[in-house]
Image 1 (cartoon, rainbow, N blue to C red):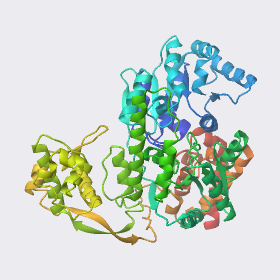
Image 2 (image 1 turned 180 degrees about the vertical axis):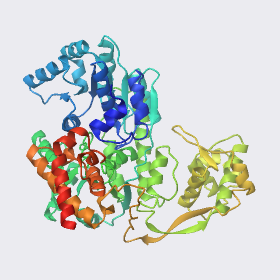
Image 3 (image 1 turned 120 degrees about the horizontal axis):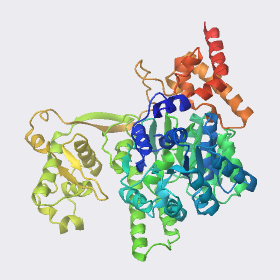
Image 4 (image 1 turned 90 degrees about the horizontal axis):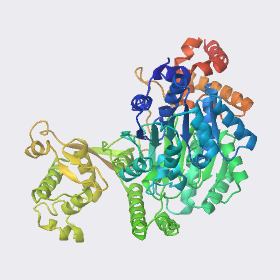
Length: 632
C-alpha cells in the first residue's frame, strides 16, 4: 500500500511534508482526533486529503469534509480533480439529479472525498447513505465557526456533534482552522467532543508576506496611494478590502476610472452578480477584487499577489486572516493597510451596530462587547506602531519574534544600531522589583511603571513606590516596548501564555543583571530614523535556496515564466477553470528555475504530480525546449 509520503509525491507533486503535516496525517491514520491551528498557506488541506486517499485504499471508507462555503468546496474539488482525485461536493447549488448522482457515487465507493455544507448533516437520507458506506474520517474545516467566541460563528456547526452521534461508529475527527485563541480552541474541542486530540498550533509567521502601513492625510491622498500601489502590481491579482458597501462601490469606480481591471463584491449585490464577479476574479478576467469582508473566506485563489485594506479592520485576527489571502502559493506578496484616524470612529460605529447575539446571556454579551473593543484597540496599536510589523503580529498571536525582520514597512525605514544595555538593565530590574513583591505585570504595566505613569492601576497596586518607578520617564512607550520585546526574544525575560500574558524573569535574568558572559557585550538593537527607503533591495537567489518568486529568476528565466504563464492561461481558457488549477505561480517559478527536459525531471518540480505530468507534461516541456533553442 502507498505510504502518506508516496501519496504526497505521486498525487500532489510535493517532495516532502511541511512542518506538522506528517504528524497530523499519521495521527489521523492512527485513529486519534486532531485539533490543528495553522495559518493560511501552511497546508491544512493536505492534512486531510492525504489520509483520505490512504484510507480509501486501505478500508474503502469515505472522508467527509465539513466546509462553510460553497465557493471553497467548488475550488477544492476542482483542484483535486485536476490531480485525478475522486472528489465531489454536496450543497444547495446542486439540482436534485446532481445530488442523487453524488449520493450514488458515495454508495458505490466511487468517491474518496466528499465536501459537505454543515446543514447537509441534518438530512436523514444523507446520514443513512454515508453510514452504509462507512465514514473513515470527518474533517471540520474553518472549525472556529463552531465557537461562540470565533470571528465567524455559525450555529449549524454546533450540530456536527449530533451527526457524529448518529453514525454507527464514530470516526476520528480532525478540526482545522487558521486562527484560534485559547478560548476558541477550548470551545472547538468541547463542541466536537474531541477525544484526547493531538493539538497542533503552528507558527503564524508567513515569511513571504511583506507588511506595510501608510497614513494618508485625507481621502484624496488615500485614493492616490491606492491607485499608485495597484499600478505597481498591474499584472498581478489583488484584493482591496473596504469597511462598507458604499466604500466598495466608490473604490471600484475609482480603480476602473483609472484604467485598472477591477470588480466588486458585497452583500448588497444580487447573488448572480456576486457569483459572476467572483468568477471574473478567480479566472483572472478581472485583476482586482474590491470587497467587504463578506468576500474571501474559503477562496483558495493561490495567485493573489497583494491585499490592501482601504479601511481599518475590526481586529488583528480579521486583518491577518484577510491579508493572509495573499501569497497562498508561497510566492512573495504585499499587504498594505491605509490607516486614517477617522477609520477608528467608523470601526466603533460598526461594532455598535452589531446585532445582539440571542444565544448568549447578558453577561456573555457584555464580555463579547468588551473583547471586541479591546481587539479594535490592538488593531489601532498595529496601525500606529513604529516597531517591526511582522513582530507585532506574531507577538499578538503569542509567538516571540526578533525586533527586526528586514521586509516590513517599518523595518525598511532607515535604521541605526544603538546599544540599549542601560535601558535593558532598567527594564529587567523593574520586572525583578515587581517579582520581589510577589506580584506580576504585563508589558504595558511594566512600561507604565518605568515611564512614571500616574494611571489608576499603577497607583492602586503601589507600583509608584518601586525604586524603578519613573526611571525611563524620558523614553517613549514604543522604545520601552521594543527593548522589552527584544529581551523576551533573547530569553532574558519571559512572557506567559493565556489571555492576560505577564512578563517574568528567567534563568538568564540574574546573569544579565550582573553582566556575566555572554551578557557582557553591548545590547544592540535597531531603531528607525528618517523616512522609509524608496526601494527594497531584493537579495539574489542562492544555490542553496530554490527561487520562490519570478523576481528571483534570471532574465532568461523571467522570459520563460511569461511563456509558461501564457500556455497556462490558454489551457485554463480551454477547460474553463482558473489558471492556478493547472499550476500555481510557485510551480511555474520552480519550473523556470529547474528547466526540466524530461518527464522524470518535470516530476522533480514542486507541485507537479503524476496526473498533471501526464496531462500537461509534453506541452510545458515543449515550450521550455523552444525557449532553450531560442536562447542557444
